[in-house]
Amino acid sequence: MSFGLMGYGMSASIISTTLGQPSFLNHMGLLTSSNAAGLEGAMNSLYYVGGIFGSFSSSWIANTYGRKWTIFCGCMLMVVGGALLAGSVNPAMFMVFRFVAGAGYVSLLLHRRYFRLTWPLQSLSSLVRYSALDLRNRPS
Image (cartoon, one colour):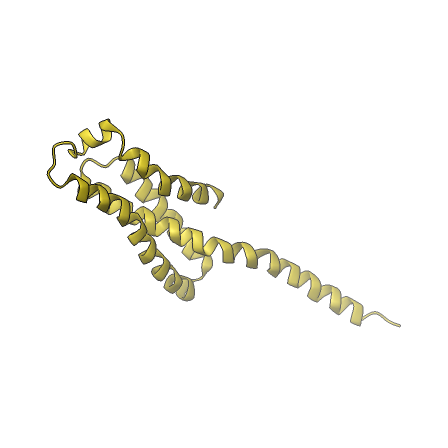
């Protein structure tokens, strides 16, 4: 989960330097395109639109299947989206997988907190419960 959160920060901020690289702009055909500004804006904003989709869908997945499956799905979307972002060959493919990566990263970002908070508390609660039972059952 730590790599996922580190990846979220990198993925959210790397787009500014990526869109400034002449080699990326040339590869995607944005240097000669008439709607280059619109495509660059869509490349930037679809990550956050995917994040909105990921936040709503991950709450349904968490209620239906549990937090572990939500984190797993977020990790899988993150890995698939990141890998296919790196291999994008045109702006449409880049934008689609930017959306997928945004959904995965935000899903992981949201549910990591709940998992981290409840996982130690479950083991601590069992420790407190058993120690309380032990104190009650001692002879006086």
